[in-house]
Amino acid sequence: MITSPPSNTREELEGHSDERGTVEYSLALGDRRATATLNYLAVQGVKADRISVISCAVERPSCSAHNEGCWSQNRRSQFLVKEQ
Image (cartoon, rainbow, N blue to C red; front, side):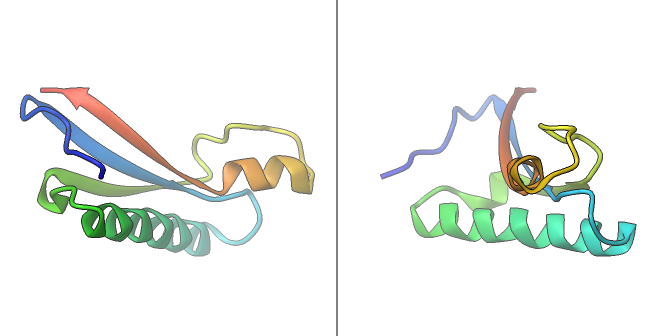
């Protein structure tokens, strides 16, 4: 079972996408990706009301090459825990 982080933290789920598609499409895709991850965590018992969802779309790629191998690395959800 997955447990929630300590109460003195703030959690964010970032949804990312690759560079292909329009800005609007990438933002919506990033949001859907992060929301799907949040839904999974909630089913596992994590308190979803403590997690905010944001779409980073193509703003912070993990790989900058222009090929399928790199694009697949950029299509991700990233979970961040920050101290308040």
